Image 1 (tube, rainbow, N blue to C red):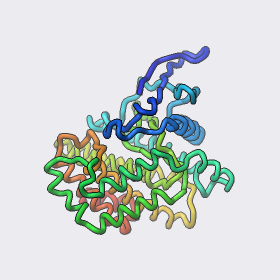
Image 2: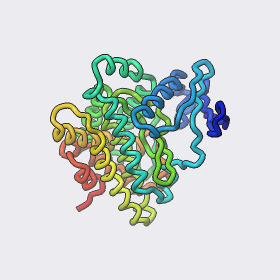
Image 3: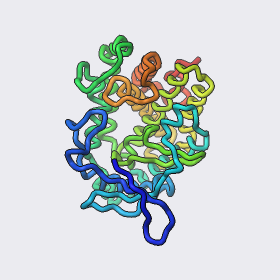
Length: 343
């Protein structure tokens, strides 16, 4: 993706131009040209950026225009911001930035929730953010292929291969992964980011911006939070492996702070609030387990665990425990106990 600086009108605000790849050149980096992405993703991303910033101003880079012919999005320059994954690998992340992330996604979910929108507005949202090629990729590369033994796109180290049976030979893991896929595909709850991991967030001190929103669609809000918490959990195992126990323990606090901040701000719900929140956390646990497993057994790994096979094995165990126990997890504290084997 090419980025070019520029100016708009009389403003002094630097911009960057994000040019969508051509049809045959636009593909998943981890898989290569055999998996091209639809060019329509630029339009989806632009519409999502507008929706997110309308709901929660400052949640994403400001957008200035989208040229559908040239497939160019012109947006705010974030040169003062840094990639969250790179920062957290170095052991740098403030509590305020964690709260900022959780608050933004909670408000986006709240303002674009089935409990808040009229029937015509919900239908319009579904029309804008329905089942796209990118959602299909998520279905395949998060919920299907990583749980399919001998799928050719899967890749993992020899050390991890010795523990892959924990997934492939466990009927409960496979059955619950299928259940989570069904929730992902069928629960039309709210507008979600759809790919919320630490590599799709930019941070600057206590501020955060959500990026790469081309996977946005109307789905279960727990998927966003599950993916985000899964990435904090994998960071925990990275830092424990590196001997940085102090920051590893902080990632547990990040997960708890994410849950607390989210529920303080996501006040749209169906049914009774207590039941809704408990089920939400159960879904978060299931989605977190799927995300961890796919990042270790599947095609797209995370830099946090690269070159750390023992940390990857430990994280894989956490993913398995979360999927197996998801129906018994109804608080973030309990999720943390099971993910980290805490006492």
